Length: 123
Image (spheres, rainbow, N blue to C red):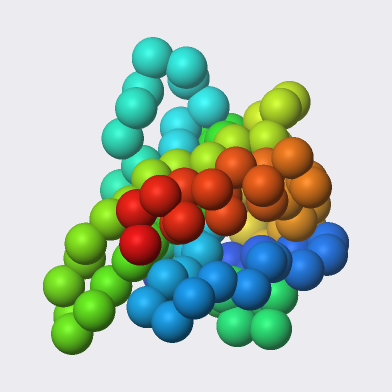
């Protein structure tokens, strides 16, 4: 088993849509087993800055990537949901001593429309 803190750098191939103030898009990794619905505890939420998220992980394996849309005001989370492109993006976190670099596609135009509709309906 890996020690917590192995470096992970996740880069988006493309851009995220602009959202209203208070809304953000994070990345989440879920165990790729379809029966598992909760995010992987071994990988914290991936917060993008300029299309790059830097984090750490403790357990190698296959993970499905989702875009997690969150509305926060004054530190309080008011709305959130996960959005997936089909086919789902799957990444492999490997046992390695160095920084693991992964590249995932930005949301498709259809998924961007779905995200923006969610924000509009829940904002």
